[in-house]
Each structure stands twice: as structure tokens, then as C-alpha cells.
Length: 225
Ligand code: SF4
Image (cartoon, rainbow, N blue to C red; front, side, top):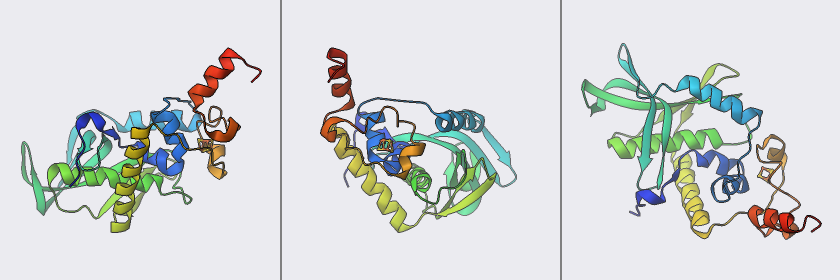
């Protein structure tokens, strides 16, 4: 099995940007361009409420942990889970300082409503579950949850083989792009309207080949070009 060194880990959450638009992910991670829009700011605020670092609360036969750090050597990613619920279950795993056996189930909080057009949220959630399975050597997590702020409802997400293969495939692709420092060309579509980077994406970049930084450097030298 291929494993990645810790210094080569990518951010787990990057998969939601990569699934939304590969160029958006590359602009953020490879070209380190960032722009806030209402969606990203509201997303942060919502996550701030979800996060209460290292806090574990017991609710009957369930433990609720917030902002749990996770990683995967096989996928080369690390990140945090908003919430992980551990359910008391005879088929689960032991947890340090807790009696009994527990089965983990990640819950990811999202602003807005479920998105029919993209699997981005489900991919991120599935990646979290795959990290937890690898870290805790626990049985396969079959279902996890997405909570949407707009609907105030949980979506049950089956973590199918297909979803898992897509997650692995995307991280492999992201590592390849990152190693080559490759930023894909503009591929404008419906997503561009809601994109936090639409003002810096530069869809009129000459031939779409140069990087944003090269373009900005040229503009600073000679703005008429
Ligand atoms: S504006 Fe469109 S092409 Fe550019 S990064 Fe955003 S989604 Fe991708």
C-alpha cells in the first residue's frame, strides 16, 4: 500500500473544493490565492459554533467529540471532523479512558441546503470516515451525517464503495497536481456564480496557461498588457 509522509499531507477539506472545481482548489492550495464571500464567511461562523476543541460530552450511550483531528497515511491527508459521535456497540473499538466498545460516526456541519448538483459534501464526509477507520482500526462506517444550517436537518449519507473509490481517486489526483504545481485552466460553468474566487480566477487569462501569479506580475510590470 502506498503511504505518504506527514510533510506531504494535503488538507482533507480540500476535496470539497476539488470536487466543486479543480481550478478553485489549485488557486487556493497551489497559488495560495484566497477570497472571502458571504458563503465562506457564513460557513466559518457556523463551524465556530460547531467547534469546541477537544470537548467530549456523554449523552446516554453516545459520546460526542468536537473538532477531532484525523489523518490518513494511505490517502496523504489530515484535517478535523466537526463532530464525531461514538455509539456504544459490542462490535466497536475501545477508547482511551472510556469503558466499553464504541462505533464512530462523523457529522459534518454545512451552511445552506443540500446541494443536488455536487457530491462535494458527501466526499468530504466520506474522507473523514475513512481517516477514522484507518486511525482507530475500527469496522467500516456504513453511514455518516451531514447537517445543513438552512434546513436544520441531518442527511444520512451511505458511505458506499463507489464514494470511497472516488475519494481515493481524487486525493491521488490532488497529490499529482500538487507535485507538479499544476493549476487547471478555467472551465466556466454554473458553479462560477457561487465561487468565492470568481473575482480572482481570471477567466480571461491569456490562453489559460499562465498562473495567476505570473499574470499579476506581468500586470504590475505593464498594466496595458
Ligand atoms: S470562477 Fe469558475 S472556473 Fe474559476 S475557480 Fe471558480 S468555479 Fe472554477
